[in-house]
Length: 414
Image (cartoon, rainbow, N blue to C red; front, side, top):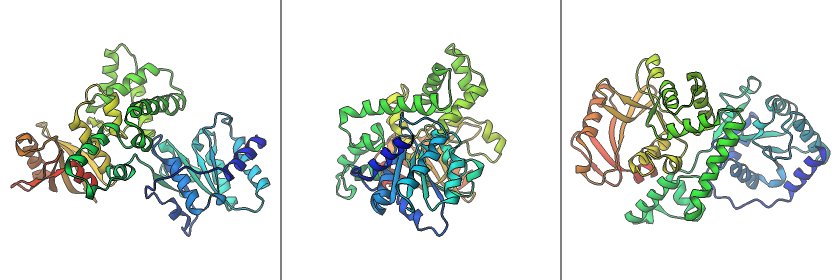
């Protein structure tokens, strides 16, 4: 093991880093803190966590950092490899202080105990990254509580997407920006896919999905009922709403036996890996909220476009997913539905006060906006307050009843 670490660490010192497009993550700002913290960089697989670590190394000097990936198949998934790592660092670089960039460290048992010891007994600063929400500062093991800060790396938003495409939205004609928006909805915001040739995009997305399924879920959680899991994901991809009971009954209809507890556990696994982002009902009672159906959203619209049979060509649903991803970054959000089944796609709140009521519809003219969309907004507004907004494809206008219509591309760029 010692010889392996020598090879890895010396190789890093001479390694040429790839070209990196700045996403504004600015991890080096965490180095100036007066209180040293373990920085946890988390997010779904292939959203750019590793590149954010490389960007940090570029900015502060590669010679001041040491990078290790714990997904290397040559590494035994055993706790002593961590002790061997620090022993080798001390031998090769005596009296040196490093920023340790540790990728997918959660693959090693008891890593948190080692991290606490290094954090408290050495001058090294730890940046850990991984595709599990268990690395979030709120969910870290007890021994690291209060000693860490979290940075979440999401897929590219539309503004970042345009920057990766080297397109200035202020210089684009409307047809061109709508064409790019359609590409963004169907192929999503994974950086590698955004930069890939069009014919390769579906192949790369297939690989992402299969790797996520096998490594991040089946292997990590030792799942034996793999067919049940795969069908469960298909049900979620094709259902606008879900409850654990409803999913359980649907699986039974497919001759797949799984208890409600098992289904709920599998859903939690998908959330832990940032794949699934359920949206709860806006209701005053916590019990009612927990019992109600949740709306189904994902880490990126590309999964709906590629793997959903119900929504793959439904651009309205893809628009809704894009709006969710934008709101998810900055707001406390819910959906709303009353006893008459009148529904609002999104309710945003801040400090217990309703900020916006938002409907999403694929409309380019006023006649394409249904009376139901408008009446639902007005009904919700009478109960919740807030500004009323309809996100459209490219219609921009203000209605007499106080509802503003905003094109999706302007909403995503705002």
